[in-house]
Image (cartoon, rainbow, N blue to C red; front, side, top):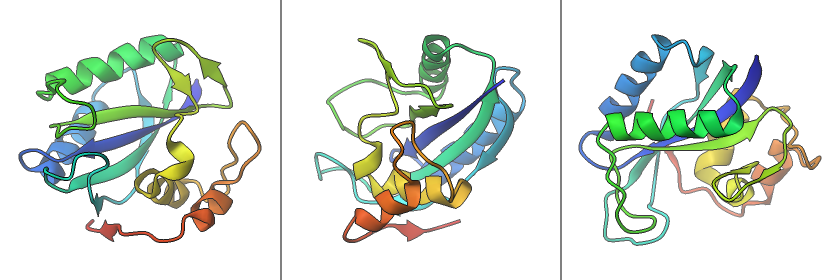
Length: 159
């Protein structure tokens, strides 16, 4: 089994309910096991500001899926929850990003692991640090140090 961390986000409809339903759903699936989720946080949208705030969290899980198979699985979950791929960084019913796949470094045309934006996004770092405060990325950087390097956090913990 491989340890993975997955970013969860939503800002259309009722995002809190969507993320709760997603978590209930993945508990029933064999592809992910030993799931634990961070608190939910409200954040301003990244990119276009003419959309609702996001609700974000991070999910820890274990999987036997290979990285690209896991990406396909996550994209199918997004589709199952009504994801429509429109403009970049636009509003969405569900967004799932593979942040970390154990200590793997992967550069593929469809997938980069660790996620390339991980170190700059407080809506990822804060819930990730909540789940794994001692976590060290494959490049040797500590989650706590990355979180400290972000000047301000405009996140609001909601659950």
